[in-house]
Amino acid sequence: MTRLALCIVTLLAAPPALAQEKLVVADCGAGGCRCALAAVTMEEAEVVLGTAAPAGSTTLVRFDGDYIWSSLSLREIDLAAGGDGECPLELFDVMVPEDGKWIGTVTGRQVSHCPAGLDAALDPMTDALVFPRDIVWNGAFHPDRFRMEGAARAIDWSRVDDTRFTGKGPAVSQSGASSLVDIGVTYDARLVDPRLARIEVQLKVRAQGASQAVIDAAGLGKCDVRVTVDIAKASG
Image (cartoon, rainbow, N blue to C red; front, side, top):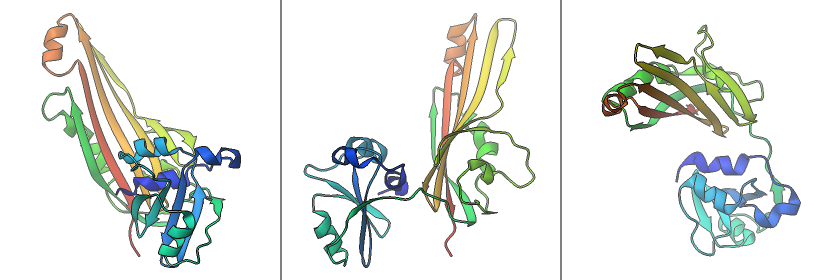
């Protein structure tokens, strides 16, 4: 299962009064587990994971990088992982990315209602994210640190919370005698876990004109391209 699940674990923790509504997560290793409340419900977690929890599941378990839904008690889960059966609920600390060498990989590309080849327009933007760079985070996540050293700042980032930022690139608008074309690029950057960030880049092309049917037939009336880039800390 994808490491995206860890974002469930490390979101802002829920107040104890809402414990019965929030997801319980067991982060397990060879010597037992750490059990905590996430800030999301099981239903919200299912949306993030893209898979429904089997009937009777009460806990999301992370073990050796894999994620599974479990109906076992926290005591049973901890014992199965080699612990002593004690796994008191706590609140996970705020997530901080690890300093070191990070490198990006394009992991997804979706094209909707666009002429062939237009998705290549995003290549220069994604290429800037896929080469290695050494990053010192200074104890906080900000996607601007993925920018190439010396490169001009081209994205206007807005903070959503400690682990998520949204951004906008320069917009382009061009009008002719009988048409108007707007092109915009947006970004959604999330810290998934201390060693992984995910950035979604979306290109939108909107065209209007007197010959709207021709514009739509050419695939420029409502064209969307979405590229996903995973940026991970290198091992070692």
